[in-house]
Image 1 (spheres, rainbow, N blue to C red):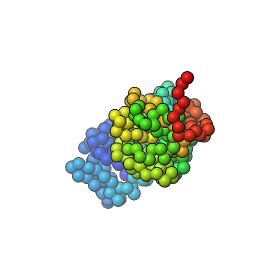
Image 2 (tube, one colour; image 1 turned 30 degrees about the horizontal axis):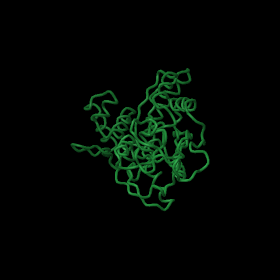
Image 3 (tube, rainbow, N blue to C red; image 1 turned 90 degrees about the vertical axis):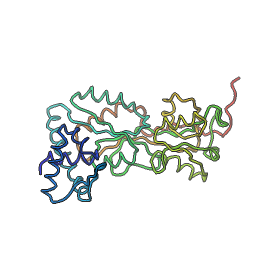
Image 4 (cartoon, helix red, strand yellow; image 1 turned 60 degrees about the vertical axis):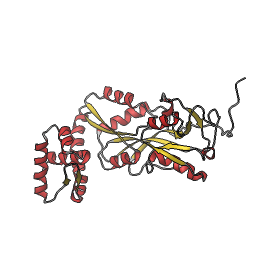
Length: 314
């Protein structure tokens, strides 16, 4: 058993593909398959269940890959630490990002990071907060930008709060609530909704707010893309709840209405303190400099107002 074999196992586990793993390791698929087969013979266990369409870890593989990731990560950390001691940060940062990040300009932050540390690379993974948190915990990601409802904190990872925003109602321009200065969750009880898929952290924010208010709602459309949700609203098919920054970035023709008792979302940078990778510490430093607002500042701060139309301009 050698480190390269462990690296191959980790890559196949992460990509669920021998072909993609070989590409990421810059070897032929046959060479990678041969090495994994040799490792399986050595330990006497099948690590992967293969079919013509899928590759998945066996029970033995699930147990093995946990320690393989630790070994591969430790080797990378040792190599990077020796380089960092000489004054240079190297290595690949594996960064998870939710698609609705607003606390940071992600491309600009990565550009600043690469400018400060030109010997590094960044691999981006887009997903929902629950999956990204789990991948930070298991070591397959170095850091992640998460968004969770205010009552929930990330578990098993170190975090830095980046921003806190109250979600707003997004309605078609000719909607009966368009133009209101502020509404309450109860005002949305009879609306047809578009929202993120059930069971995701993005959906949990709105579900919790309606449950707290004792209001049932009809979620007729589900999508994991904020832009698609906004398109459904612009077409007059539904309303939705999103953070203001996401709505501000769209070209869709929609109206925003503040919701006084609506849910709040907190964005975090999450990482595993145990990994000790210099590349992760360097990225955290860049994020600290790039964060747009101080932790704990609530974007919806201000007095609550009634659910009445805004006064007309005189």
